[in-house]
Length: 284
Image 1 (cartoon, rainbow, N blue to C red):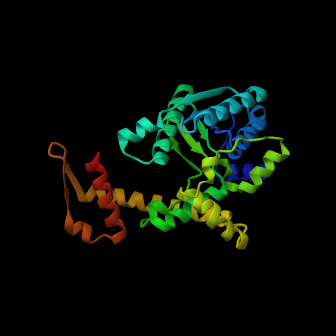
Image 2: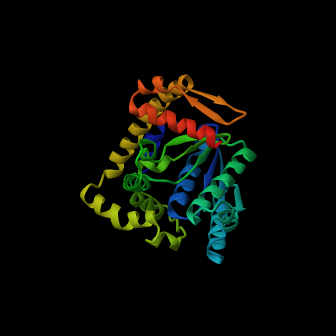
Image 3: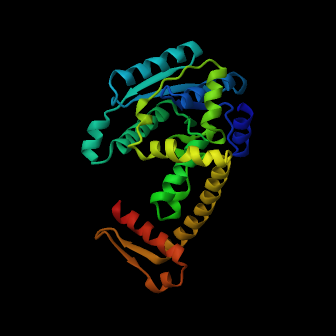
Protein backbone atom coordinates (compact mmCIF):
# COMPACT_ATOMS: atom_id res chain seq x y z
CA UNK A 1 0.00 0.00 0.00
CA UNK A 2 2.80 2.41 0.88
CA UNK A 3 4.27 2.27 -2.63
CA UNK A 4 0.87 2.90 -4.21
CA UNK A 5 0.36 6.01 -2.12
CA UNK A 6 3.85 7.38 -2.73
CA UNK A 7 3.49 6.80 -6.48
CA UNK A 8 0.10 8.53 -6.38
CA UNK A 9 1.54 11.57 -4.59
CA UNK A 10 4.42 11.78 -7.05
CA UNK A 11 2.08 11.53 -10.05
CA UNK A 12 0.12 14.51 -8.73
CA UNK A 13 3.25 16.54 -7.92
CA UNK A 14 2.50 16.62 -4.20
CA UNK A 15 5.74 17.05 -2.28
CA UNK A 16 5.63 16.69 1.50
CA UNK A 17 9.22 17.79 2.08
CA UNK A 18 9.65 20.68 4.56
CA UNK A 19 5.89 21.23 4.81
CA UNK A 20 3.55 21.76 7.77
CA UNK A 21 0.89 19.04 7.46
CA UNK A 22 -2.28 18.90 9.51
CA UNK A 23 -4.17 15.60 9.51
CA UNK A 24 -7.89 15.36 10.20
CA UNK A 25 -8.20 12.38 12.55
CA UNK A 26 -11.48 10.87 13.74
CA UNK A 27 -10.05 7.71 15.30
CA UNK A 28 -11.41 5.48 12.52
CA UNK A 29 -9.25 3.19 10.35
CA UNK A 30 -8.84 5.61 7.42
CA UNK A 31 -7.56 8.59 9.38
CA UNK A 32 -5.52 6.51 11.82
CA UNK A 33 -3.77 4.70 8.96
CA UNK A 34 -3.09 8.04 7.26
CA UNK A 35 -1.66 9.53 10.45
CA UNK A 36 0.58 6.50 10.99
CA UNK A 37 1.65 6.48 7.33
CA UNK A 38 2.68 10.14 7.40
CA UNK A 39 4.36 9.73 10.79
CA UNK A 40 6.65 7.10 9.26
CA UNK A 41 7.81 9.66 6.68
CA UNK A 42 8.12 12.87 8.71
CA UNK A 43 11.77 12.49 9.72
CA UNK A 44 12.90 11.38 6.27
CA UNK A 45 11.16 14.29 4.53
CA UNK A 46 11.55 16.83 7.34
CA UNK A 47 7.92 17.88 7.62
CA UNK A 48 5.93 18.92 10.68
CA UNK A 49 2.90 16.77 11.49
CA UNK A 50 -0.07 17.88 13.60
CA UNK A 51 -3.20 15.82 14.31
CA UNK A 52 -6.55 17.63 14.47
CA UNK A 53 -9.65 15.94 15.92
CA UNK A 54 -13.09 17.54 15.77
CA UNK A 55 -15.72 16.51 18.32
CA UNK A 56 -19.15 17.09 16.78
CA UNK A 57 -20.79 16.35 20.16
CA UNK A 58 -23.44 14.21 18.47
CA UNK A 59 -22.63 10.85 20.05
CA UNK A 60 -22.08 11.90 23.66
CA UNK A 61 -19.57 9.80 25.57
CA UNK A 62 -18.67 7.73 22.50
CA UNK A 63 -17.32 10.72 20.56
CA UNK A 64 -15.44 11.92 23.66
CA UNK A 65 -13.79 8.48 23.88
CA UNK A 66 -12.80 8.76 20.20
CA UNK A 67 -11.00 12.02 20.95
CA UNK A 68 -9.27 10.49 23.97
CA UNK A 69 -8.13 7.51 21.88
CA UNK A 70 -6.58 9.76 19.22
CA UNK A 71 -4.91 11.83 21.92
CA UNK A 72 -3.34 8.71 23.47
CA UNK A 73 -2.11 7.42 20.11
CA UNK A 74 -0.61 10.80 19.24
CA UNK A 75 1.22 10.81 22.57
CA UNK A 76 2.54 7.31 21.83
CA UNK A 77 3.65 8.35 18.32
CA UNK A 78 5.03 11.71 19.43
CA UNK A 79 2.64 13.78 17.29
CA UNK A 80 1.27 17.17 18.42
CA UNK A 81 -2.48 16.88 18.96
CA UNK A 82 -5.30 19.43 18.88
CA UNK A 83 -8.93 18.70 19.80
CA UNK A 84 -11.73 21.06 18.78
CA UNK A 85 -15.35 20.94 19.93
CA UNK A 86 -18.07 22.22 17.59
CA UNK A 87 -21.81 22.70 18.10
CA UNK A 88 -23.47 20.98 15.16
CA UNK A 89 -27.01 21.28 16.54
CA UNK A 90 -26.76 25.04 16.97
CA UNK A 91 -25.39 25.47 13.44
CA UNK A 92 -28.11 23.21 12.07
CA UNK A 93 -30.85 25.28 13.70
CA UNK A 94 -29.37 28.59 12.54
CA UNK A 95 -28.84 27.55 8.93
CA UNK A 96 -31.74 25.09 8.48
CA UNK A 97 -29.60 22.30 7.02
CA UNK A 98 -29.34 18.55 7.62
CA UNK A 99 -27.20 17.11 10.40
CA UNK A 100 -24.69 15.76 7.88
CA UNK A 101 -24.34 19.09 6.09
CA UNK A 102 -24.04 20.99 9.36
CA UNK A 103 -21.39 18.57 10.67
CA UNK A 104 -19.36 18.86 7.48
CA UNK A 105 -19.49 22.66 7.40
CA UNK A 106 -18.51 23.21 11.03
CA UNK A 107 -15.80 20.55 10.76
CA UNK A 108 -14.21 22.23 7.77
CA UNK A 109 -14.44 25.61 9.48
CA UNK A 110 -12.57 24.12 12.44
CA UNK A 111 -9.93 22.74 10.06
CA UNK A 112 -9.69 26.16 8.38
CA UNK A 113 -9.03 27.86 11.72
CA UNK A 114 -6.29 25.38 12.62
CA UNK A 115 -4.66 25.74 9.19
CA UNK A 116 -4.45 29.48 9.80
CA UNK A 117 -3.22 29.00 13.34
CA UNK A 118 -0.30 26.80 12.24
CA UNK A 119 0.12 28.36 8.78
CA UNK A 120 -0.37 24.87 7.38
CA UNK A 121 0.70 23.86 3.89
CA UNK A 122 -1.54 20.79 3.69
CA UNK A 123 -4.62 19.43 5.40
CA UNK A 124 -4.43 15.66 4.80
CA UNK A 125 -7.71 13.74 4.88
CA UNK A 126 -8.29 9.99 4.78
CA UNK A 127 -10.72 9.67 1.86
CA UNK A 128 -9.91 6.53 -0.11
CA UNK A 129 -10.72 4.88 -3.42
CA UNK A 130 -13.98 3.33 -2.21
CA UNK A 131 -15.13 6.79 -1.05
CA UNK A 132 -14.51 8.03 -4.58
CA UNK A 133 -16.66 5.22 -6.02
CA UNK A 134 -19.47 6.02 -3.56
CA UNK A 135 -19.31 9.73 -4.29
CA UNK A 136 -19.51 9.34 -8.06
CA UNK A 137 -22.33 6.79 -7.89
CA UNK A 138 -24.30 9.02 -5.52
CA UNK A 139 -23.78 11.98 -7.84
CA UNK A 140 -25.00 9.96 -10.81
CA UNK A 141 -28.19 9.11 -8.95
CA UNK A 142 -29.14 12.68 -8.07
CA UNK A 143 -27.16 15.25 -10.11
CA UNK A 144 -27.85 16.76 -13.53
CA UNK A 145 -24.69 18.76 -14.21
CA UNK A 146 -21.04 17.95 -14.85
CA UNK A 147 -19.73 19.98 -11.91
CA UNK A 148 -21.46 17.63 -9.46
CA UNK A 149 -20.07 14.56 -11.21
CA UNK A 150 -16.38 15.36 -10.84
CA UNK A 151 -15.94 13.47 -7.56
CA UNK A 152 -13.45 14.05 -4.74
CA UNK A 153 -10.39 16.06 -5.80
CA UNK A 154 -6.91 14.80 -4.94
CA UNK A 155 -5.90 18.34 -4.05
CA UNK A 156 -7.74 21.64 -3.74
CA UNK A 157 -7.01 25.07 -2.34
CA UNK A 158 -7.95 25.51 1.31
CA UNK A 159 -7.18 28.20 3.91
CA UNK A 160 -3.39 28.79 3.95
CA UNK A 161 -2.59 25.86 1.66
CA UNK A 162 -4.31 22.84 0.16
CA UNK A 163 -6.37 19.82 1.12
CA UNK A 164 -4.72 16.59 -0.03
CA UNK A 165 -6.11 13.06 -0.08
CA UNK A 166 -3.21 10.58 -0.44
CA UNK A 167 -5.38 7.49 0.06
CA UNK A 168 -7.56 7.94 -3.04
CA UNK A 169 -5.15 5.48 -4.64
CA UNK A 170 -6.10 2.61 -2.30
CA UNK A 171 -9.18 0.74 -1.11
CA UNK A 172 -10.80 0.40 2.30
CA UNK A 173 -9.66 -3.23 2.39
CA UNK A 174 -6.03 -2.19 1.88
CA UNK A 175 -6.32 0.39 4.65
CA UNK A 176 -7.76 -2.15 7.07
CA UNK A 177 -4.94 -4.54 6.19
CA UNK A 178 -2.45 -1.72 6.85
CA UNK A 179 -3.99 -1.19 10.31
CA UNK A 180 -3.72 -4.90 11.10
CA UNK A 181 -0.10 -5.05 9.92
CA UNK A 182 0.90 -2.10 12.09
CA UNK A 183 -1.20 -3.16 15.10
CA UNK A 184 -3.50 -0.15 14.93
CA UNK A 185 -6.87 -0.76 16.60
CA UNK A 186 -9.10 2.07 15.37
CA UNK A 187 -12.40 3.19 16.80
CA UNK A 188 -15.74 2.42 15.12
CA UNK A 189 -18.40 5.06 14.50
CA UNK A 190 -21.60 3.02 14.56
CA UNK A 191 -23.56 5.74 12.76
CA UNK A 192 -21.60 4.68 9.66
CA UNK A 193 -23.61 1.45 9.69
CA UNK A 194 -27.02 3.14 9.47
CA UNK A 195 -28.30 2.73 5.90
CA UNK A 196 -30.83 5.52 6.48
CA UNK A 197 -28.03 7.81 5.28
CA UNK A 198 -27.51 7.65 1.53
CA UNK A 199 -23.73 7.26 1.65
CA UNK A 200 -24.00 4.34 4.04
CA UNK A 201 -26.61 2.74 1.80
CA UNK A 202 -24.31 2.97 -1.23
CA UNK A 203 -21.35 1.83 0.89
CA UNK A 204 -23.04 -1.30 2.16
CA UNK A 205 -25.57 -2.23 -0.52
CA UNK A 206 -24.29 -0.98 -3.88
CA UNK A 207 -20.50 -0.67 -3.95
CA UNK A 208 -19.73 -4.22 -2.69
CA UNK A 209 -21.75 -5.73 -5.55
CA UNK A 210 -19.92 -3.63 -8.13
CA UNK A 211 -16.53 -4.47 -6.61
CA UNK A 212 -17.38 -8.16 -6.70
CA UNK A 213 -17.59 -7.93 -10.50
CA UNK A 214 -14.97 -5.19 -10.96
CA UNK A 215 -12.39 -5.28 -8.14
CA UNK A 216 -10.42 -2.37 -9.64
CA UNK A 217 -13.41 -0.08 -10.08
CA UNK A 218 -11.77 2.43 -7.69
CA UNK A 219 -8.94 2.92 -10.20
CA UNK A 220 -11.38 3.46 -13.07
CA UNK A 221 -13.45 5.89 -11.00
CA UNK A 222 -10.37 7.83 -9.91
CA UNK A 223 -9.24 8.22 -13.52
CA UNK A 224 -12.75 9.28 -14.52
CA UNK A 225 -12.87 11.84 -11.72
CA UNK A 226 -9.56 13.38 -12.70
CA UNK A 227 -10.54 13.49 -16.38
CA UNK A 228 -13.87 15.18 -15.60
CA UNK A 229 -12.17 17.68 -13.30
CA UNK A 230 -9.70 18.64 -16.04
CA UNK A 231 -12.52 19.06 -18.58
CA UNK A 232 -14.60 21.09 -16.14
CA UNK A 233 -11.69 23.41 -15.33
CA UNK A 234 -11.24 24.13 -19.04
CA UNK A 235 -14.96 24.73 -19.62
CA UNK A 236 -15.18 26.98 -16.56
CA UNK A 237 -12.25 29.04 -17.86
CA UNK A 238 -14.01 29.50 -21.19
CA UNK A 239 -17.28 30.28 -19.41
CA UNK A 240 -15.59 32.99 -17.35
CA UNK A 241 -14.28 34.60 -20.54
CA UNK A 242 -17.79 34.54 -22.01
CA UNK A 243 -19.25 35.81 -18.75
CA UNK A 244 -16.91 38.82 -18.75
CA UNK A 245 -18.04 39.70 -22.28
CA UNK A 246 -21.74 38.95 -21.94
CA UNK A 247 -22.69 40.24 -18.48
CA UNK A 248 -22.56 43.69 -16.90
CA UNK A 249 -23.70 44.56 -13.39
CA UNK A 250 -25.28 47.53 -11.70
CA UNK A 251 -23.91 47.02 -8.20
CA UNK A 252 -26.16 49.65 -6.63
CA UNK A 253 -29.33 48.07 -7.99
CA UNK A 254 -27.96 44.52 -7.85
CA UNK A 255 -29.03 43.99 -11.43
CA UNK A 256 -27.34 41.88 -14.11
CA UNK A 257 -27.68 42.68 -17.82
CA UNK A 258 -26.96 39.92 -20.32
CA UNK A 259 -26.13 40.43 -23.99
CA UNK A 260 -28.59 37.93 -25.43
CA UNK A 261 -27.34 37.97 -29.01
CA UNK A 262 -23.80 37.22 -27.81
CA UNK A 263 -25.05 34.39 -25.60
CA UNK A 264 -27.11 32.83 -28.40
CA UNK A 265 -23.94 32.31 -30.41
CA UNK A 266 -22.34 30.30 -27.60
CA UNK A 267 -22.70 26.56 -27.10
CA UNK A 268 -25.47 25.51 -24.72
CA UNK A 269 -22.78 24.20 -22.36
CA UNK A 270 -21.25 27.69 -22.04
CA UNK A 271 -24.67 29.34 -21.83
CA UNK A 272 -25.57 27.24 -18.80
CA UNK A 273 -22.36 28.15 -17.03
CA UNK A 274 -22.69 31.86 -17.80
CA UNK A 275 -26.19 31.79 -16.27
CA UNK A 276 -24.81 29.98 -13.24
CA UNK A 277 -21.99 32.48 -12.77
CA UNK A 278 -24.50 35.30 -13.05
CA UNK A 279 -26.72 33.78 -10.38
CA UNK A 280 -23.73 33.16 -8.11
CA UNK A 281 -22.86 36.86 -8.35
CA UNK A 282 -26.41 37.98 -7.62
CA UNK A 283 -26.75 35.59 -4.66
CA UNK A 284 -23.55 37.02 -3.15
